[in-house]
Structure formats: structure tokens, C-alpha cells
Length: 361
Image (cartoon, rainbow, N blue to C red):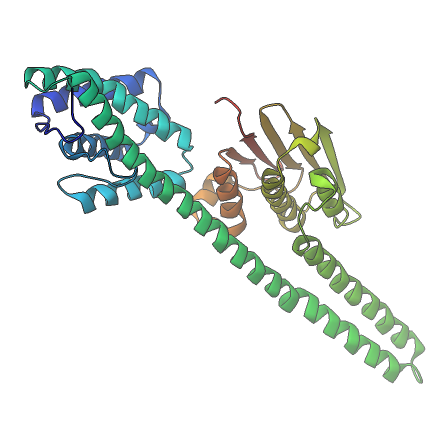
């Protein structure tokens, strides 16, 4: 029988080259999107070599996630970098898990043959246990880094959202209130001798205070409990009430929103709300439609407006706004995909597709 601490010789260079060739072939056959980025491909080859380096040093009695390799710190750093880079690039974690299965599929038969030639007892068991543990240790480290990165980005988005609300109050609501109060004061000054000017100032005061009230209503709608007890549909309808009267804003719903898990409903609301807010503030639309389709395995959300639009390619060259990054990160944290399409004078469409828990991918 193979013991858990049996010594295993290092993997030969010849075996490594064969394994890496098999690995690339499996990824190509599966048309893995990871192959589209040369930097990611190099990173994947480095991870494969890290796994093969670790096989002779695996401690099967250690908890999963304890990386064992000749250069342990470098191996951990590589796994962390993979998790962070995949999260920042919006790569779904399923792709990383699939790539990990291809590592095992590529390496296992080659390692079995090599260990058999080297006289290791029960080469299949030895290769399978050690290879699986080396891969899982790195998946654990990379997955933790992936989630930590997204959680930190979402936390930063929350902070930035509170700062934005403060700026809205300071830059829009407060000046409007000041103008309103000054107009009321001038109304009192002009009223005895110039009733027409006094009436004009009263009109100015009404308009300024109405503007301040609109800003405050928007911020109140954004700061209250997002979904609450009445669900996602009511939360979206409530937010649409803050749209200007000259915008035809509506919600189209398919499926049962009550079946959406609470955490998913909350994050999806924040994404759709941000897309709606961007349209109302920046796009100057005449119509805006939120579409929500609740299926058995996935959620689809869309915000479409007929506003001024913009050049998406040009926007990518600049630093993206906090709101856009927040939407992408929230969707990525749910394991979904985020799509933005727009053209100047042709409106903007934001689409979100999020798999529900338990859905097969």
C-alpha cells in the first residue's frame, strides 16, 4: 500500500513538456476564453509548473490551502495574483475551475507513467492524491484572493457612493436651498415698491426649492433599504417614481421576483438602480425601460434608454467611473456577466445575466 508520506521523485523536464502540451490542447479543444490573453496563458503555464513542483512535497495531512512547494512564498504569490487578475478582468471563476480540471486531466496519466517507471508503489493512487491536493491548495488560495478582491472593491464602491451623496447634497441641494432663501428675502424687499419683481423672486424661490427637493428625494430613494420586505419589483418601481415627469420610465417583468434569493435581489437592484440613475442624470432620455426576466436558472436585467449615448470604445480608454466599476464588480461577485452597449445619439443599454444558486453552467 502507498503510505501518505511516501517520497515521490521530482517530475522530469520531459514529462513537464508533455503535460503542458496536453494542457494547451485541452484548453484549445474547450475553446477556453483564458487563451485569448497571452499574459493569462503564461500565468497558467507557471501555475502548472508550480503544481508539478509541489507534487513531491505534498502533505496530505495538512489542511487544504496550505501550499507546499520548494518556493512556497512564490507559489502562494502566484495563486494570489491569479485570483486577483481574474477578478479584475471579470473572468468568471467557473473558467478557472475548468482550467484546474484540465490540469489534472493533462497531468494525471503522464505522472502515473513516470511514477511507475520510477518504481513508486501504486502510482495511480499516489499521482491522483498528490496531484489533486496540489491543485486544490492553489484553488483555495486563488479563490480567497478572488473573493477578497471583489469584496474590497464593493466596499470601496459603498464608500464612494456615500461620498457621492455628500457631494450631491453639498453641490446641488444646498445651493438650491440658498437660492430659494435669498429669493424669499428679496421678495420681502421688493414687495412694498415692486410687486412684479417680488412675484418673480417668489417664482425663483419655488423653482429652487423644488430642485432641492428633487435632489433630496433621489438621495433618500438611494439611501433607504434597497429591496426591503416588498421585493425587487416594488423597489424598482419605487425608484422609478423619482424620474423627472418628462421621462417615460417603466418596468417590464417576466417571472416571479419573489423566488429571487435576498442577497441576489439586493445586489441586482443596486446594479439596475445605478444604471437607471446614470441614464436619468447623464443621458437626458425621453424613455427609459427596465426589463427584469426571472427564469428557473438565471436572472436577466436590462436598462435601456433613448438618450444621448456615448462612444464606448473612447470611454474604455479613459478611467471608468466609480458607478460603472461598481456595477461590474457586483455582477462578477454574483458570478454573472455585465454588458454595456451605447452609441452617440443612439441611447444606451446595460444588460446583466446572473445564474441563480444551483444552476448548471
